[in-house]
Length: 123
Image 1: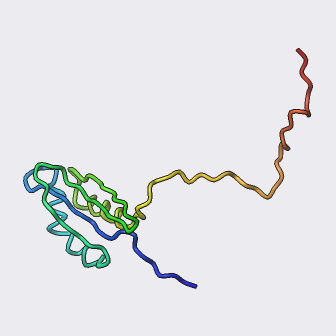
Image 2 (image 1 turned 30 degrees about the vertical axis):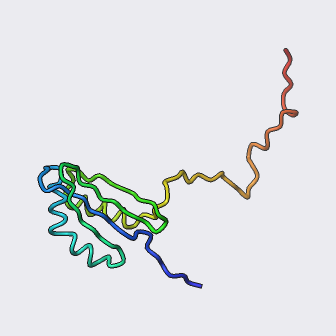
Image 3 (image 1 turned 180 degrees about the vertical axis):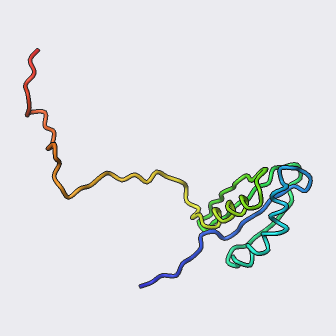
């Protein structure tokens, strides 16, 4: 059967500073782009709060209880939009290496190594 898609991100928190120059891009994003972003993503709760004398941060909260935060100091509003979309689309899981051992249906060209075969060594 076909299952329903459930977005893993349940809340995005936007923290900014009115005074700091590193929040210039975040302030522009909040004024111009955030309303459209919120309308396009009604399933995500969006909160905006000032943090005086701190760098701007976007924090994502996920249904598995984890949180991810990205500092967006001195970024332009387009770059901040990309970071917000990245947090929205993330699963909330820890990043881990996805390496799998190579498995093949074909036999090895060189054969299987065996310490009892091959040239004998003498000391």
